[in-house]
Length: 568
View 1 (cartoon, rainbow, N blue to C red):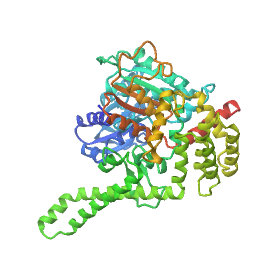
View 2: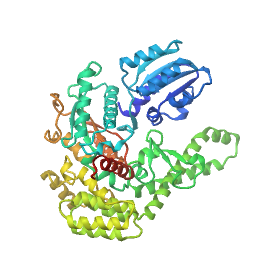
View 3: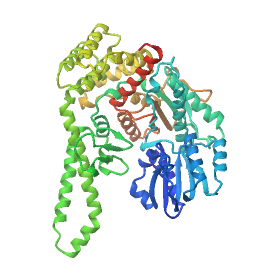
View 4: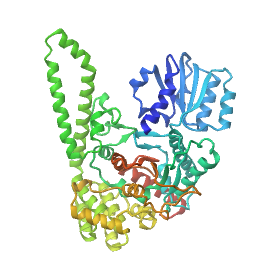
């Protein structure tokens, strides 16, 4: 069972057994979980005439006894308090309460005591405490995502709630799949270790009865890793469709807000990009930018053919046929316009920021050696007036991550040049990145130059040449999946939690990245799954990153670290 169908199934079960007109009441997190798998028109078909947020419905006093309320909320103390107040003065005919995760006994008692008017029909747990972006990719949209980057000496109370939210999300995934995993984590990461141990404690001790499913021959694997093991992937420009839209414009819960990009009519300001609802996007989400242009041209040509045949209406039958096909025609028209708009806008940004030039150097820094040539290329781009401040910063970061040990003098020269060229970004941010995600802090072989097998693979790749210079980079996750598939994931780098070890090769693997995932990584997972290696991978993260979001988290972590310790 894949993620999207799992959440859809939960939403179906919530709505189909309650007949009549309904109001669906969500919180700021469950609204994301529902919106990525269910469209407005599908909700209408289930007789949901109103969708409200639980905190805004608290403000309203108007009675609506003709509506049946379906609540779908995270089981937080804040939501329980909202419910307590709303049940004291019921506005709806009946209340059906669904929670996205485990309720504790105290919360159940509060709900029972609050239902004095006996309007609550049912209370159930439906484990959809995550946002299923794609069939094999989920996120938790965790607030305060910068928490994972704080130095270990800083342990604010909010770090515990950050870890709790992640453990809840991971638990929901395995409860939805009715599995209990064996757990491993990235050895050099304190926060990955903490989350892995807390998840294990929940699944094997506190709620062991709930997780005691019929055992599969080989337990699934949960691997908890740290974004700082691969800080390169979120810093790179992207050249495949889905990843590129997120990098240049931004995707939130499978929606793209075009309001900031250009002047569009109201109905075009927000467009949906979902592989479940858009066949063209599904077929092209992992294709590179050059091919997308060709494929969109083909789609426009097809549409023009349909439009031409619609102009040729001569008989009553033709008219009836046109009316029957009109919804499909409108949908096709909307789709063509959406993809043409996105590609046009991205082409403008690529041209304005000279991204083809910048990206070539980024890819060289990420994939190939040659420190002297790299220094010269980065210096030239820092001097280029057309290169934006954010691109300059990313180039220096990529150079620093690659050559931090090899060329400290030249690194200082780049820091000074960056400070003089981009007053907004102080070089202290690059040093903070090296402290948090430098070579001494990382698990795994990020540049393929520590492990003899990786060195050989890189040489072979160099000899064969690269199909596309802009997409030659592969995230560290690709190697990790390869190691799992071949049974080579080293215990010393990724220890097991407790005495639960893997007997044989797992068939299901959930890789959770604390700090967030990228669409480049979700593409790697989808391509790996398409090989039918006998292992199904699912990727999850605390947040969904592009370079802007990664840098924002880095800046926030640096600010807190400075104010807490007085040092960078």
